[in-house]
Length: 176
Image (cartoon, rainbow, N blue to C red; front, side, top):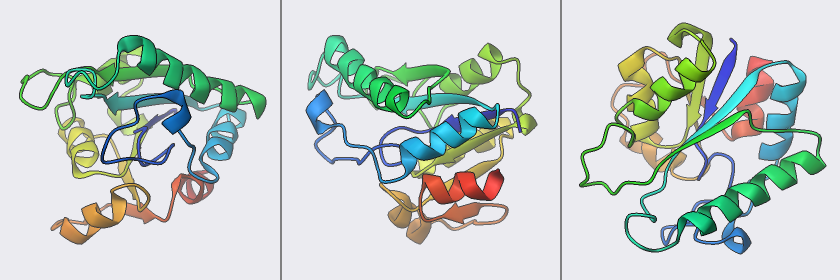
């Protein structure tokens, strides 16, 4: 494995039905930042791929989103970690873009950026759309039960080949 592709909300940070709209609302899930640091120390590339339809809905601005991501990067930096690339979809669910998960545009961008074949990557997400995007490209995937993960698991018909973990820290510990 060369590349870890992580969803953001519900995997790295606490999710909210009313969206994460400001740096103050962005709160890391316990152990998630330390998991990213462990990936960095193992020499793996880390990409974040995240749908951010709150932009299209007018709930926050691109400046707000940049400030949220700056806080995430700053918190990681304090621990000696980093994210190698961050990809986001600014579109709403009805925009029919290629980047909004479950479509695979963001994942294709991550694989291309790091010149990584799908089978040498791993996606860790908490929602069905994360898993579907990975499946469409043949990227191995894992489900965490944080965020929407438990609900996703409860509604998932085909769990074949899916690794399931309580949280990102547990998933990373298993793979390292």
